Length: 74
Length: 491
Ligand code: SF4
Image (cartoon, rainbow over all chains, first blue to last red; front, side, top):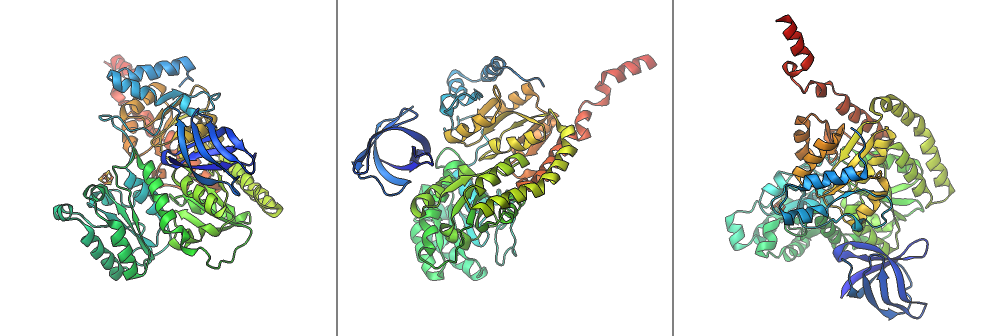
């Protein structure tokens, strides 16, 4: 499990930040993205895949979350 | 110098790599690249933030340097104890030229060095007692200090001292904040991790100190983050931001104080200059306090104007007008500077090798003077820095990450730039090769270079370095061909 930060830019796209490795990237796809179910598998621009426990849509961004690494890039 | 094509630059990299043994060659090859503006993600072409190869001459610093030297050191009204042997702090003392106002030794302590001066017995029996004693001594000798930070050097982590416990106890006794920072030099691959650790320490020990405390805020409150006031940089930036109508609540950390840091969560926008060293705390404030942050660049009139407009865009029309007013006011002055120096510097080439933000931020300033940056590199950047750099640099220019002494020398020999911008360790190597060098870490005892006022000084300094007549005197008279011929004739 890793601590990550999910942000939202002005255009409404999600961004991903992994403080431990100082990795910043765009989130290309997110499995669930509705008000009551949000999260699931997220795919990064660099090819990495993480899993966030599906939850209600966070009220505010950016937000720090716990995520599981499914498949890391590099 | 002639501009190289992509193939030529690639060949140059291969040529330089030739001397390394197979394994080292493979590793270093990943850190050298030819810029390609079409690449979106830098990691496809350049690897960064990796351990330096043992045996090469790297220019990097350690985590302690990143925390004590960069982030914490400039906070002037705190006493920063270099906890461990005396050398780490003493040899880096006041080297960064973070200017500040105040009476040193009375209410400000920026250029002083405080250390616990570890001896053999402290390593064997632990240094906690010494630290506790030191805290009391500091309080007795310098009663006007506002707080203490304990900057760990390598041995602290190795012998397992509990500086947190000592700090907590000491803070109760003297009734001032004491911040333990676990920035032992061996952590991480470069000073970059030190910045991160220092940011985390600020987050954990400082930022929430005034949560809920009353504060008279205005809609125009901003803070300047990641400006270390080298040669007065932050002052030159601050006047522009204030002139356009914003209120600067705090300044990190050049000429900064503990109180300013504690008040930062009250601002409306964080202005981030050095992304590398302070993005962590900006992200934290964005999450916890909902304060957005904005990267800006105050090098060279083009970028300053761009940044002022970008900052103003976050506020109402009065600020937008303010920004235009400021730009219009300085425009003629900047034009005069450009008119004076551009003809002298037009077409000259520069190679940069610095840290943090400058390898990409100063490109605009050189371009304003008609100069061209043909190679750039960072000591301790991460992938996101290169993402930002690729767009700034011309196609087929050279990028080098954590360049070794050898590589840098070879590149300079081959590319023959008119100027190199790097640090003190490189300065005399290149000057002896006959190539002028300006220190781009400490502005070569000059500065400020930020903002409009800084650009005038920047232009003058670059001209002084390049146009200095000494560079044409590199060949001794007896080796100059025409004169020997003269002599022959005379004989
Ligand atoms: S690496 Fe360790 S010993 Fe060396 S300067 Fe840094 S803290 Fe001091």
